[in-house]
Amino acid sequence: QSALTQPASVSGSPGQSITISCTGTSSDLGAYTYVSWYQHHPGKAPKLLIYGVSNRPSGVSNRFSGSKSGNTASLTISGLQAEDEADYYCYSYTSSHTYVFGTGARVTVL
Amino acid sequence: QVHLVESGGGVVQPGGSLRLSCAASGFTFSSNPMHWVRQAPGKGLEWVAVISSPGTNTDYADSVKGRITVSRDNSRNTLYLQLSRLTDEDTAVYFCAREGYTSADNWGFLDYWGQGTLVAVSS
Image (tube, rainbow over all chains, first blue to last red; front, side, top):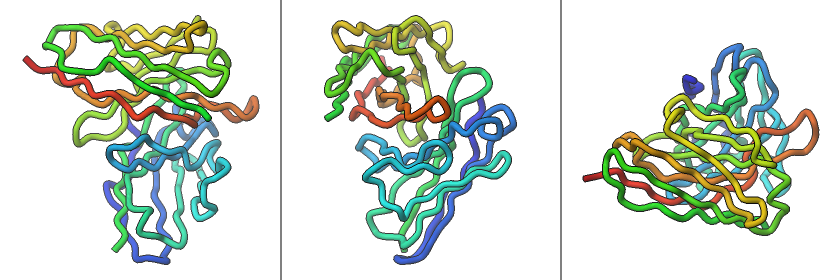
């Protein structure tokens, strides 16, 4: 159950777009559409941003979008805002009937 | 509205055991699988366990397998986690989370989370 691989940090200026990658294997992220993304401000409860690769729950800004190609999923944040500074995690179901998070990416707004 | 509240955290001695609870409200608790997720200090989120909605099936992360039991009491709207033979690697904030479901092709995501309870393994 190795963690999915994310860049440790991603940064951008206000208004810019950034993309966070998440790389797994053919036994997890590559095999299923059960891929979701979470925003986590330290000390708070994580928040669901994207589920089923590209679906947004009601109430989540349309500045957040998700996609997947092969063994890599991506989260794009457009129109970057100061409040987007947080940790972001991808998450996938696995062929072992378990789940795995990504290593986490810290987003910094310059 | 959906509300999840964890309790039972605290300081536990190495080799000891813990039992955490997660009280749920605002939804039909018996309808959703439930998960435990933890975050060690300075580390990322780690999936720990899932239990099916009736409580008949569980799956666990390798890091805790053999030391963990997750259960639920649907009559009390409460989820439990028991973890034994604790080491400092079990020091973490433990979150409970509800698994969401929108269709047969869309499940496995965590749509509501508690605020977490801190477990510190220390002598």
